[in-house]
Length: 88
Image (cartoon, rainbow, N blue to C red):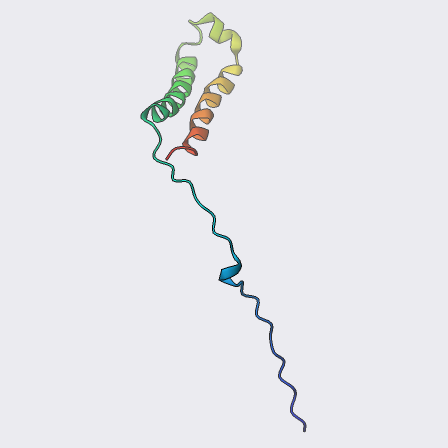
C-alpha cells in the first residue's frame, strides 16, 4: 500500500516585528472631589428614597410626584454607579 503525502500546515502566528507599538498615556488616580461627588450621588439617591418612604405624606410636593420618586432616587444612584467606571 502506498504512503500518503504529508502536507505542510501553514503558520498562522503573527510576526511580532510587524506590529506597531501603541503609546499608553499615563493617567494618575482620580481627584478627591470626584470620589466625593460619586459617593454624594449614591447617598443622595438613597436619602431621597428613604425620605419618600418615611415622610411622603408630610411633604406635599413629594407626594405629588408619586412613582417619579423612584426614578429620581434610582437615577441619582445610577449616576453614582456610572461614575465608578471612571474612578481610578
